[in-house]
Amino acid sequence: MELNIVSKLENNRKLLQELGNSVSILVNSSPDIFDDPGIKSCLEGFLNAYEEAVQRLENPSFRIATIGTTSSGKSTIVNALIGRKIAPIEAGEMSGGVLSLKHSQERKLLIAETEDAAWETGEWTGLSDDDLYQRIRTVMHSYHDARKKREYVAPQVTAYVPLLPACDSYLLGLPEGIGVELIDLPGLKSVQDRTNLATIQQQVNKAFSLVALDYMQVDDDHRKRLLEELKKVVEYLQGRTDSMIFILNRVDQRGADDLPLEVRIHKLREEIKEVLSLPELPDVLPFNARLLYYAQCAWGAGGFNEPSKVDRQTRLKFVQAMFQDCAGVIKFNTKENKDLKYWFRDIEDQIEDNQTIDDETMRKLFRYCLKWSGGRELWERFRLRVQESFAELVILPALVDVFENYSTLSQFLDVLIQTRQIYNQQQVEKERDNLAKIRHVLHENINNIGGEFKAEIEDIIGGLKTNPRQAEFKRMFEKSDRL
Image (cartoon, rainbow, N blue to C red; front, top):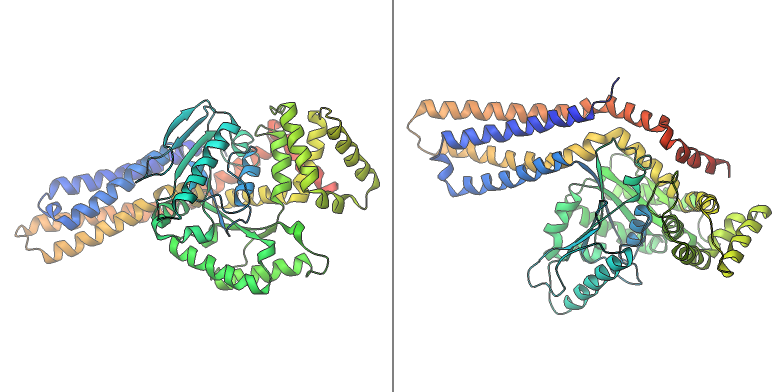
């Protein structure tokens, strides 16, 4: 079957336009009804949501939002997934604001104006990764210092840079023309600040959620408190718990006397399912974000079947940090393979001698890190979710606010028509017919939007898997199974 994702998107754009036109006709035909202050407010909410949905369907994107416990490594995970050091990572809570990372070849930083902002706002272009990192870090530090005195609306920061999953489409398996965006949200304790809830809710409602948990916080004492906190946040944010993948980060901190990792994860999955009232057991992946972060940034955000664009010294810096901070992981995974152990030692010697690590060596090194960190499995889970639920993850999030605002407007109109004394009975009946038609359009759109994409997306994923351009990276993933 010929792929036609563009026409399917266009169909939904037309349905959305028909809904907007129907509401416009309704407003113009009954100006007396829409003079009511309550109706005006509902109409304004609908129109704002409608305009945003039009823009998002014109430029559809797959959004991943990271949430989780404070200092659980969320920002390290984000940097690992985009292939560059942009999100600030330091000891303690750094992700107090909302950092959006959008794929673009034109590098730009936008720090939105917020009420009484105690940090610099504005727009900058042509910044290096280090410039971006330092500016974002300064904003987060300023925010944390300022909020010690009073509450502030969290900084809204957007960085436009090339992102790994957009540069290599095999990673997510998205159809051509679909954008990628990652959103680094505050830790759970920060999320519960009432001042920031409205802003953050707008992000989570329209994104796939990656929930980071810290292995050192999932013992019996911490686990229940952690999940109850997460439950509150999910309730506050009205997030879709069925669109979450949980990451158990820092599993390398597991002690020799701890419960087996499989037992710990099974227990955690059962409890998450119960506390969050999930219909089935959630994905909980053991993870080492720091290992993946160092290895990925040493390669960069480009495709693996192309030469790396990372310069020699930057690569050496990241690989050296990996050998230093992740020595235990490397030792554990090479202890039963002497040849592999000696190969890693040779790499470490090269680093100490400040020798160049070529792309071929870096690719091989990265394959091991991808498997040992849990990164390979995470990308596989992402691809599976995209394949199974493309419409729910990309199309419906763009329309959810339109549906909700229209429903409120429709209910308000029903009440108003029934309670107001409108002497033109024929006009009343005409408005009821219009409302019925609008409801029908809305109902059909909601019911059909998921199903009509499924068969095409399966073909799209199949096409990606057999695309010669993606074959090398696909083989790389498969090779790591034999390591």
